[in-house]
Length: 249
Image 1 (tube, rainbow, N blue to C red):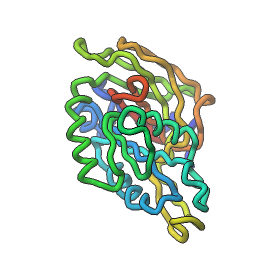
Image 2 (image 1 turned 60 degrees about the horizontal axis):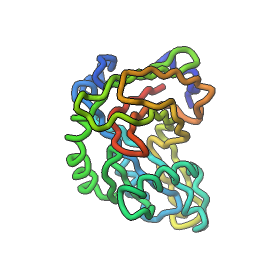
Image 3 (image 1 turned 90 degrees about the vertical axis):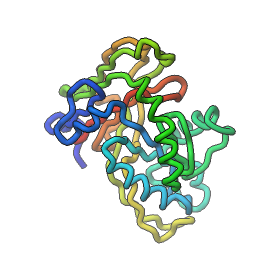
């Protein structure tokens, strides 16, 4: 696996509306805000593998950032998820408190921080993308990210003049682009599942108050268990995602 500190040699910066995108990502920059799809999944959930495969397909779309958030709350079923993190489940619970009745489940997808649906239902995900796209286009904020030695540098623009979303946080997720797992017990015993864009850690870079801002985050403060960074500008507490960018190694 590529070390995060070595990413600067081969860094790929994708920015929203700032003209920093490489040739194969020009469509992302030209189309405005990238949509973000978050899948909450578990190795101990028998209904999750179809959702995991669907997320892999979604990750190939140039207009999306697709992320997998493995959760811990099914570990008691006989298999401890090897990729799950308690903070992933906490993030899902925060979504649940205002997107639906407060209960969490797998596989669940959250689209652009605005709508949730069953993670194995491609039609529902497509409908959620279409429903939220006008909002994220209208509220899109310029965002760029690059590596400078042992720091990750993030720059944001200002909120649109008539925006109602002007208070949020910049989040940095460390992501492992591919993680094959052989599941030896539990509901998925005997399966080999390939998990895509697995979030291995997510940290707050700082607050955003609707104005242009810069953030310099030492790599020593970010999880190194990955080969890509994803940066999200998301409204409080976990509301609309108005900007997204990534750096690959």
